[in-house]
Image (cartoon, rainbow, N blue to C red; front, side):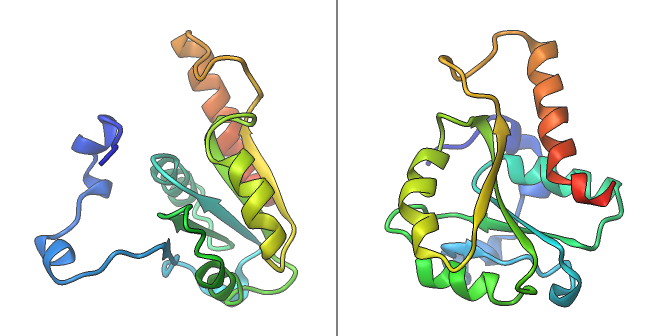
Length: 157
């Protein structure tokens, strides 16, 4: 299992023992915290960025943005994602968000292989393209994350 160290101490990332012993693996984790009929934007995310998006949504007291987690990218759970997206209004914008630069991480695979099988246009919000996975400066890294989160919730402004 791959997991960023940050998530080992993050209370929001913890779950009950029952979730591991009684639960099952979910390829797509729905967002049950928002009323589907009120959603204007659906953020698709895989990985640690989910917790930053969730914290930002909570801070903004936003009830119009759904955050749907993709826990499996291959084999692609196309039907499960179609079903989840079907819960939201047809005019809701669908956005794939990732912490990695746009030319890295899951997006190149997702955009080429997954999106054409969905019944929705999907746009990307991520860090700018880059040759390296990290900018190498903590302040610049934090600024890029702030910009990414701001863009993810820009429909509220």
